[in-house]
Length: 481
Image (cartoon, rainbow, N blue to C red):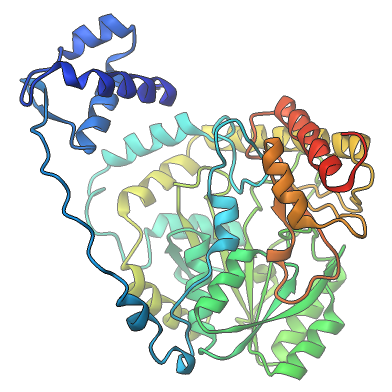
């Protein structure tokens, strides 16, 4: 496979040399570029494609690449200030807000500047992604008969069957919809289950992306505290009574950000409380495939123990593969399934068939279980490396729970340390971290950080990131780094 850095470097070099050629002038042949720069033909092709996308060169099959004609000067920008009135007029009466705050999501989606250690990432580092297996699966998928045709609206039957087996219990393929990533599945579920203005119960703390979805839909997130054993049932029952909510969103397995697993004795309680409240439980089973090798047997999804259609289950392949491999599933039973289906069709039509076919190829290949075993071992090693480094060099950070799944830790800051100031100082020191405040829908009881160990290159980068965090801690709190 081609090296991304080589493509970028070659494109930069060719861009600098374009002034040597007159508009319409022919560039050296691909073979000449291969020989001169000692790169592969694929790298040359990718670099020329990049310049073509920028409008700097024109490629003609069989003829070569040519410098593009000079561009006309860009027209001066117009006056867009009128939009402030149009976007805000009568906004106070809107049940669904027109402006959406994506800051909590962008924290884990935006790549930090070059050289910054990425302790804020939400996806596997490229070295952990099954790139070869995904490329092979996509290649095989493209050659399947009908691969580029329109898929069934609910998703390919074989892929729905595979997800149904993963959920377990009595869930069948007929009760599964294929969706475009877990975020899309959660959005569909909340739109289906609660009208604008309604309360929705959420774990506290919880995933900021889910809070953003709820608020963008005009819903009111109501926090229910989580401890080391997951959501607290007594407080959940109190919240249902106090608010009249009809939806509770939870992550029973390796909860984000605490890493908690819902205790066995609480699983039935949560379902019973929701059933008595006439409410749905949206189960976000987002990291089941990122279990660490010392975890032991995992509990089944809540949906597997739910015969009454209380649970709407969301699961995805994205976390265990790549941020661009956006294939997930919604599982539900009863009349709610038709509403979920209708919303999905209106919003997105369907997940592209080649991606669904590639997912089938990937999970059916021998490479898939090998990949899961590999990341299981590697995530445990990285978790242990980060835990040891924090306890050795930053013992003032409280780390009462070390999860056996997922990709992050949730340390509590000492009393008086400002997480916002520490986050800013950390970035100056060259390490990106995530403050805890966006994970709370109301005032947080204490300051926290979320530190990811999956988005870095390995144990060496974890050690360097903790060293830089020590420097930031010294800047904010004083003392030696």
